[in-house]
Length: 323
Image (cartoon, rainbow, N blue to C red; front, side):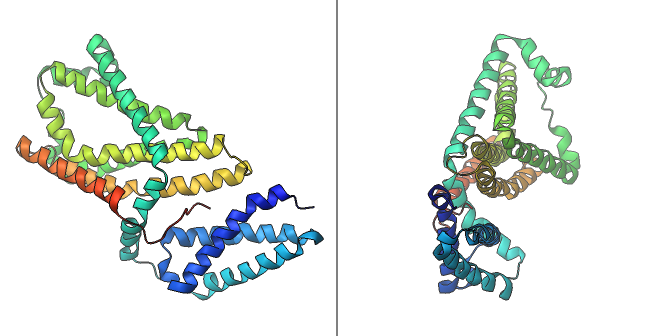
């Protein structure tokens, strides 16, 4: 017999599917974003399983009839309509939908930011009190470069396209690793975010002690205002996934992880275009001889645009889009 608890746990998914179908009926299939369409397919499959379970319980016949009608509507939309995908559609999805996804997951992103800043503070404090700590973290070659008051980034200038590709690949690897390690209950994510904070703190303090703060931060600022938030957001995605692993609530753990994973994947995917832009800036702008005020001004403008984008843009749909 189907329990009341099971019905209460599944009913929000039925309501969400009905909401997506109503939206599509009123405004057309194009009103659904890429992530909404992915969710529609996921809900269709999950609720199909729910219908099979309800059909085994004679007392739940009215619920079975409701789901059968709901799935018939979904089947018509999924299989009778084809939505053309294009680069413009992907751009529109990023512009219209990603800020809403970010704001829905703001709490884990704030936690990720706190972890990163704590790591940076620890790295700076340890370096200030123990020079050997910086040597262990950065290695003798980089410490020697700092001691000579030279920037280790000059090699980028002569190989900009290749450097840009390598930078993007490295940053995406770090970010996607921080996201994927959320499956460890968030422990791996905490390590990645904290270590990157420690690394920044060590470099910052080592350069400060060598009187190289201006060259360092004028290099870091133009791309760092995009790169560091992207890594922190990817850390927030990992923590969101870890939340589903550790705290499933009333849902079965498998479904809780699936739902959290969908939200986390959406959050992490938006970091990729941000890191692409950051990689181009890091290779073609950051290591150049542009004046410090110009670089800092560019960094301020980029960071302001990022904040406006994440906190002021409105999505094309409302409501929680988790599955």
